[in-house]
Image (cartoon, rainbow, N blue to C red; front, side, top):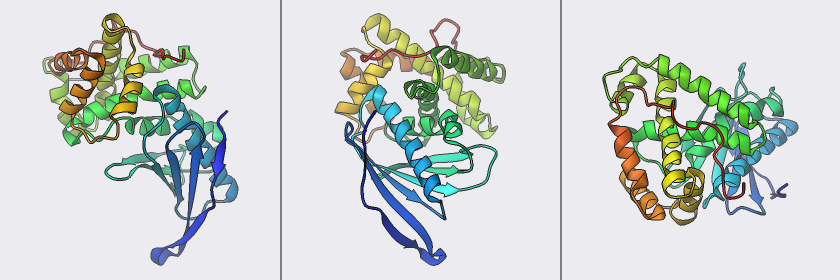
Length: 285
């Protein structure tokens, strides 16, 4: 278990609302990044401790797969009431990398751990912001990663990871209504129709296919490639073509670019029937 070092709290007033904002910096002894936690409104001590433990565990789950983030991460909590532990969240991009969570702290730590939202949002931060036009790629990546992270955290067993992937992909495939058109070209229309899961999980297929290519031709997994990327290149701002060049350079071949070109022209919902779903092995395994 990693040791959590707690630093002195900083309390300030939040504008006209005069709401207390608590800033806590958490530093892991095995990671370069620190979490900067901001609590809006009022959260009780036990609620703050529960949320702190939760996000730190998710961050450790990501770093257990791909290595430490090379930057600090700002986490903002806004209180809400919901039947879900985390009804909404979004990432910050730019000079500050972070996540804004809307949370219902009445839910238990177990409920928070089994919610996929934090694993999804922390996964977004593995890659730089790639532009709005490539949101399909970013969301597919985070969807692919979320269950890998939850397995790394010890929340999901391997068979449950496979089951969840299969359920999401099967449902999304049945809801895709453009069989004669290239999938990526239809993603703006799907988003306009609010069929976000279809976009997310269809795009996630790219990463299963890429992993299959890397295992067969490069003797590595997509998780291992991401680990190399985090060490060498994550601090850089990037568009998708630059990301492709960086990943190709790390493998010494055009594995990523060739698979991406193939995926961009793929007609219909991406074929996932002949790719292995489930937990991707890492060097630690």
